Image (cartoon, rainbow over the protein chains, first blue to last red):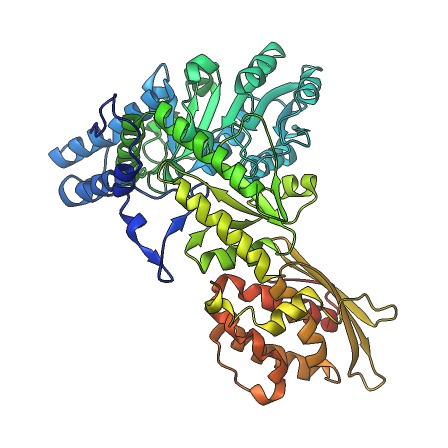
Amino acid sequence: MNHFSPTRAFDIARIRADFPILSETVRGKPLVFLDSAASAQKPRMVIDAMVHAMEHQYANIHRGLHWMSERTTEAYEAARDAVAGLLNAADRREIVFTHNSTEAINLLAHSFGRGVLKPGQAVVISEMEHHSNIVPWQMLRDAHGIELRVAPITDAGELDMVAYEALLADGKVGLVAITHMSNVLGSYTPAERIIALAHAHGAKVMLDGSQAVVHRRVDVQALDVDFYCFTGHKLYGPTGIGVLYGKRALLDAMPPFMGGGDMISSVTFERTTWAEVPHKFEAGTPPIIEGIGLKAAVDYVQAIGYDAIAAHEAALTEHALARLAAVEGINVIGHAQDRGGVVSFMLDRAHAHDIATLLDRNGIAVRAGHHCAEPLMRRLGLQSTARASFGIYSTVEEIDALADTLGKIREFFA
Amino acid sequence: MFDDVRDLYSATIIERGRRPRHMQRLERFDATAKGDNPMCGDRVQVWVKRAEDGRIADTGFEARGCEISKASADLMVEAVAGHTGEDTKRLFASFRAMAQTGICPDCADFAALRPLASVHEYPSRVKCATLPWHALIAALDGAGSASSE
């Protein structure tokens, strides 16, 4: 599976050749895909692994006594090993498969929120959360008497660490659930300090790594983070599979989320006992093909290596910030010190949707809207932004095309 | 570079979007409603003043949104002047069909709205064009608010 020798320089042409969709044209123009933060494109290895499973090696898993089922179980469980390796989890059983990040957070809000947290305790989120890390906690608040506290951000778009620590001071906080990287501003949050402060005040921490794990190495043991979630489709894998990492002792202490097959030890009409983790949290037939695809995606990312990925994307981001800053009338939203390849912006003369439509007419795909982060938009005094986001296959030339076209859009609305 | 979007961003749409003629809150009005597009955060509020016979005497709006939604609201104000509530709903049904399909069923009735026909080529933008109409219909129905979803 290792397509890249360790000494090989980051070869952008070779990486782009791995992604079949990048040779497509849109409206007669080469596709410039700058919307990877919404969902990333898929390399040939992921596509082939999924097709191979369906063509040659597929059956339901964990229960079959026949060859196909046993081989498919092995392939699916190999994905768990791959993800455990990706996150440097101490134990493969700490990797729970869900369908996406949203389900991972809902699982945590349900099982940890209702099963471990007590009414009167508090959960801390931040002002720059995706709706998926806001709404489950509001539902927990309303159903279970949990107080929801919101850590503010600074005008630069960084977590306000002084205010954050103050929210922890009374010792009532049982869980901190904060993004590891903003999907709007590109800001990383200081994971080590967030976790150290929370632990010092008796709180556990869940980091939403949906964006971050795509761009930088995450070591859950080094971070000492209690829970970490991400989704497969942003990491060059398929839709329909996500991950919740949790420390073993914490997962063991949590009740199940959904009931059904695969998550039980034994069932009678009087009493059911639960399977061991992670299966306790994986009711029903899991996303088998998607798990096999996720393993291929993780292998692909690991083979390129986070050092090479981070270096490439840091160079792209630096180039993008410089090129965009030179576009007249542009306002880049957020300027955190530690930031990754997600850049939101506005133009003085054009609404974000008009920008997106005109970019699209030139084959350039960006996102426009509130990015599922309405409270952050309100904090920033905005309704919507346009957002360009980069992946391992993004190029300096694509960013130049974006900046050049934005300049022309401004002229168009003169 | 943008020649192929001149169909949607025509001179009329850009002019009406950038310098709407009717973007104002009516001081005296009989009905008002807000329209929200929850997917994008666009918002419009419409105020309606009726004549003694119940027909629309004047309409004003305030909008926070893209060129398409503001231009659509501005053209709508002129298109519905003098119409009854029922006429307005029929006009909206025709307009929505045009925005979705590009075909202009009763075009003689609303030639002024034709610049918006091209929006059908941009499915994600159709709701931008129909949002002010949803708000207007909600105002006429006394509903207070409407969503383009």
